[in-house]
Amino acid sequence: MNSEKYNNLIYIAEMYDDLFGEPLKYISNNFENILILIFHRAFRRDPPIYKHHEMPDNVKVIPMGNFIPPVRLSYSFGSIGFHLYQQLLKMYAHRAAKYLKNNGINVDLVHAHFIFPAGLIAYFLKDILDSKLIITAHGHDVYDLPFRSEHLRRITQNILRRCDRTITVSYKNASILQNLGINNFTVIPNGFDPDV
Image (tube, rainbow, N blue to C red; front, side, top):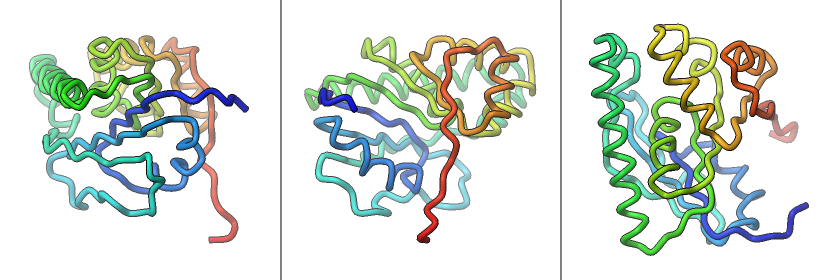
């Protein structure tokens, strides 16, 4: 196991939930700080959760207070709607970068869960912060959204090609990623705890 300790990991997500609780225990020893930047998706039925689990001392959840329209709303209005969506998320990436700069936080790695919207914000942050980028593509962001329009397919491909690594949770998703021309990925299947 790598004993090198990195400075800061930034997670970009729509909520804090089980995606972060247990895995954070395992990776928190590799980073000085882990910050989870929460961007709320508008029209969610379930509110974001900020402290669902006991967190390691070096993990902080930061609600960014921005509301993101669902990606399906943006592509409903064609390329103009998606262009506006991209500009909104780019603005959010700049706000996140400003927050990090104002708090003296240098970033080693940005990790986003789902390609849209978190991955798109992270895509913009990669350049702003000059950091490495990992996106975990979970499901509908792989097997559904890229096939809604040619524009969404190109944007998905551009985002994932700029990643230093893409993680996906199934071999079916891996096959779809390959068909999209994405080859820099790792499959890490979702697991389960038999004691639960």
